[in-house]
Amino acid sequence: MKRLTFTYIVMTLSLLVFCTCGGQKSKNARTDTYSSGKMTLMCDESFSPIVEEELAVFHAMYPDAHVTAKYTNEIDAFNALMKQDVHLIITARNFSAKQLEYFKSNKIQPRWFPLGYDGLAFIINKNNVDSCITVKDIKRILSGQVQKWSEVNKGSKLGTIDVVFDNKQSAAVRWAVDSILGGKPINSPNISAVKTSAEVIKYVEKTPNAIGIIGSNWLNDKRDTTNVTFKKNITVMSVCQMEKATEMNSWKPYQLYLLDGRYPFARTVYALLADPFHGLPVGVANFMQSPQGQKIILKSALLPYRGDLEWRSVQVNDD
Image (cartoon, rainbow, N blue to C red; front, side, top):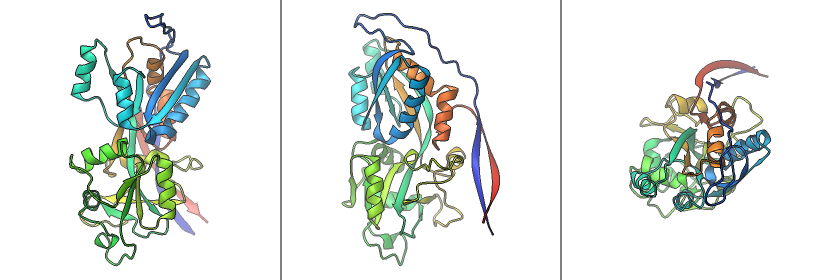
């Protein structure tokens, strides 16, 4: 009999009022309210699974609201918000000082809502046994100092490390540059980008020497309600902040390890709002940070921003 110990998180949400009061007509003929009308939001593609779940529940609760999500890259999403083509975007960074000044000069008051945290995950082919890696080696790979698996794990016969991102303009690429490389550019001929997170997973499935870099919300096995199981068709690497990575000192992007800091690559997911009319975009953003919206984030294996969190150890007998 094999005994498996794992940890899961229980969340008690504090009350957050979601306002459903109506708006009034504006000069540009908008008639949407907090809970009705039509709108389009833009989202970095890496967060599309969680946004899809949020909108499904929002539409069920408010049938007079019709929200379309356009999944794109972080740069295009910000550009659309600055031009006021959309009034709500979901991404992995807050407004810059320059962007805030731009809105101020145009008499628009932007708002930002931290929704939760996900982990920037590193995935490998399920036949690759090199499943633990240090932060130092990740930096060396992304900067081009290391290009072969044998330079990370002596004895490896996998050859060149083939790194693939979800999109060359994605939040994952920008976060890797800013938060892993300290602003230095990604610099390796063996690093490329596809178009979507799903394509990264498919590429890693068929490429033994690959490392894929995607948001951890793409990895959740929804059959596991404790959020401790990732997809079976790939392996999620454990990351270590020490000099040498072992199974005992390396951590995967589980909710608990995002919460206590053991997983080093946790990033904040933001709803960024710039809506002078204060209509449906405000309603959607408020819903995502409400108790209902935060429960959806919890169940999707991300770490919610709001709520009192506690963790419990559970032992399960595996016959």
